[in-house]
Length: 114
Image (tube, rainbow, N blue to C red):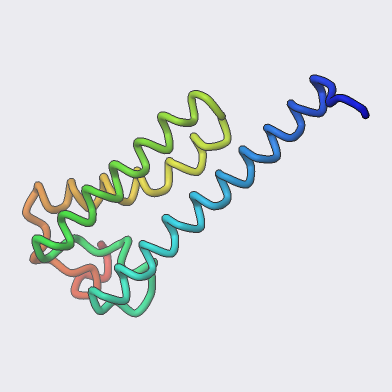
């Protein structure tokens, strides 16, 4: 019977972390894609660029920003998560800032230079 060495345990733990990080990205992306369809947007990119118009979209934007922040904070333990967390943090915080400034009434499609 052979015992696992420290190097084997480290490799298995890094593999596990990569799998967990990949799963987290997949779950967040699928949730954002579902929210885009529920809110009537044609694509996920259009949903992420749009300013939140309803209270529900504002809550979703705050939720997205907080998910990104949590993933970035976990990046302190596992640095590649920092890069993954920046995307939901940026888009969620951007939508929250638009809602705070009252830009929910302006649509990007109406302003080609926006």
